[in-house]
Length: 529
Image 1 (cartoon, rainbow, N blue to C red):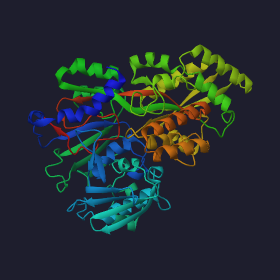
Image 2: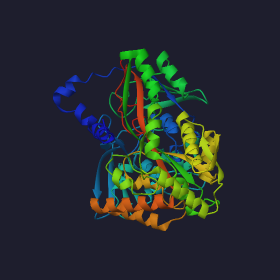
Image 3: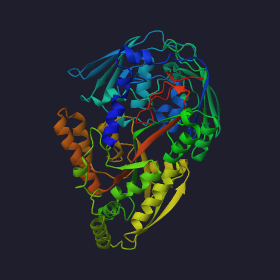
C-alpha cells in the first residue's frame, strides 16, 4: 500500500470499526482486571506535563491526568470532550466556551471545577517565574481566560485561529488542582495528582513506574485494568521482553526486524499494527556559530543529502521509510513529490546537487569543513541516522564527527544552543501546520525551534497561514514557507518514520494512530487474559 493509501486507511479505521450495529455486535465486551505492562524508553526529567517535551514522559504521566478535550478512542482523529461536557465556538466574539462535567474528582478527593481549568491554562499560557511551559507558542492566541461559573470556562482569543481547538485535546495539557497550584506553582514537578483513570503508586528510577485503578474515575466502568506497570527499557531488550511475555508492548513501536521476529516466534499470540508516523528526523545547524552563520555552508550540507536514495536503503532495515518535508508525506498538507523535488535538498539529481554543494563550500572558503554532529543516544535508529548523514557529507569532502551523547546533554544542547550541528527528532500530535511549523520558525518566536536563527519572513508566513480560511491560499503559503526554509537551510527535514506497534494479542481497546502521544491514558485498554 502507498503511504497515501495507508494514511487514508488509518483515518478511516475508527469509523469502519464502529459502523453500524453489526460492527458493534462484533466488538468483544471488555474484561475487567489485570495489570498492563509496557516498555518506556526513558525516565521523565520531572513529573510536570506542562514542562515535558518527550513522549517518554507522557507515557508515564498521561494515565494520571484528564484534559479539557481528547482524541476519541477508536475514532482517530475525531475530538471529543474529556472534562468538557460540551463547548461552543464563537468566531464573532473570538471565544471558546466550555461546559464541564459535574462530579469529577481529583485523586485527593477534591472536586474538579472551572477554577482548576483556568489555573491550568493560566500556567500553560503565562507561566510564573520558575515554571516551564513547553506549550507557550501553542497558546499564543489566548488573550484572556474567564471562570463564568463553577462549571463554565471561557477563552478569549486575540485572533480567530481554528487550530487552537485541537490544542485543547493535547495530552500534555494535564489539568492540575488550582488549590495546590496556589500554594506551590511548581508542585507538579514532584507530585503526581490528577483526575485521570489511574493513581500514581511508585517510581523507581531506571526501573519501573506503577499505578493503580482510580475507583472514582468519572467515566463509568472505566478504567478496566487494575493497574499499570511501565518498565524503563529500549532496543533489543523490548522485543525480548515482549517475546518472553514479561511485557505486553511498547506503545512507541519496534523495528521491522523486531516485528518480524515476534510474528515468527509468537504467531497468533502477537498483533502487529503499522502505518506512517507523525515523526521525522531533521538536522539543525547553529546559525549563531561560524561557519554555519553562512547560508552557503548550510545549503551545501542540505543539498548533499540524498533523501530519495537514502530511504530505499534505510527503509529495508529501519523505521526510516519516507523522504519528505516538514509535513507528513502524502498527508493533507504535504507538498507533492513533484513540488518538493523543485526545492533545495529534494532534487532527484544527487550528482548535480553535490557538485553545487562543493561549489558553495569553495565559495565560502570551507572546502575542508570539519565539525561535530551531536547525536542522541536514544533509539538505535537515531545513531544509524547520524552514520547516514556523516556518509552523505563525506561524499562532498566534509568530515562530520558523530558525537553520541545521552538524552539529558542532548536536550540541553538543543535548548542552550551548545552545538555546531545536531540531529533533532520531531513527533507531532496531529496533522496541523500551525503546530508543526513551530519547529521551523525563529528561535525567539518558538522554544521548539533549535536553529538559533531569526527569519521574520518565515515568522510572517507562519502567522498568515494560521489565520487563512481559504484552503487553496493556505496551501500556497505553506509551499512558500517550505521553499524559503529549505533554501535558507536553518533546520531541514530528512526522513519520516513508519510506526510499527507489536502487542501481545491479549491487549485490547487501544487505538493505533500515527502519533506517539495519543491514547496513553489507558482508560479504554483492557486485557483478554
